[in-house]
Amino acid sequence: QVQLKESGPGLVQPSQTLSLTCTVSGFSLTSKSVSWVRQPPGKGLEWMGAIWSGGSTDYNSALKSRLSISRDTSKSQVFLKMNSLQTEDTAIYFCTRNNYFDYWGQGVMVTVSS
Amino acid sequence: DIQMTQSPSLLSASVGDRVTLNCKTSQNINKNLNWYQQQLGEAPKLLIYYTNNLQTGIPSRFSGSGSGTDYTLTISSLQPEDVATYFCFQYNSGNTFGAGTKLELK
Image (cartoon, rainbow over all chains, first blue to last red; front, top):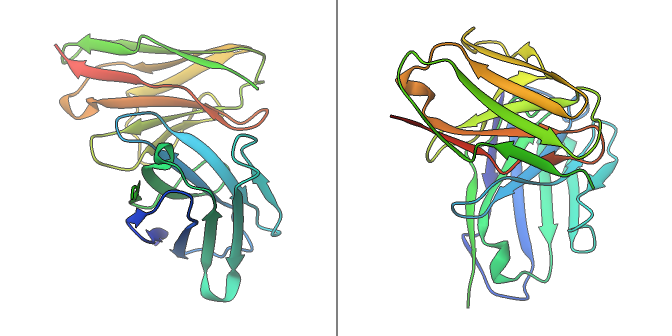
């Protein structure tokens, strides 16, 4: 069955770089896209960016200068890297499949604090 | 960027009620809109894609409609398990979520 699972550090210091991994199973990254979506505590959802089945990427214009999404198809993993983190980047980070976001990971809480 | 306005932000309704949630966009999005349900502490769940297509496994009491800049999610008979926050999402130009409608039981 289709599964996605996020992993990464729960705490990041301000100005540092966040690195998250989304490990997928039940489908191939060469046939389906994966997006990252985040949600600050008690707030709404924000689409961050996507990596398409062909390997190209799209980013939210508000985050584009700080964000990079890549993948390792052999390991069925998608990576998110975002630099210059600030407290407002504290959020639950989700990875989700396909352009309809039909399957989601459980999310990983990331706190930006010194 | 396309702006999304969901209304109401909070809706109280009784079990069995017909419930309507609205999503208005700042420009025509050509029906490129999905609806998601997020229950407390969980990841969002896809309910409706491309305005009016019911995702597999979603109860038929959920339906979607709309065109242009105005879209609606309807729950025909509210059930206790429908208590959640509902988000619309447009993918016509960029990708934008609405701020959500929180649905609670009266």
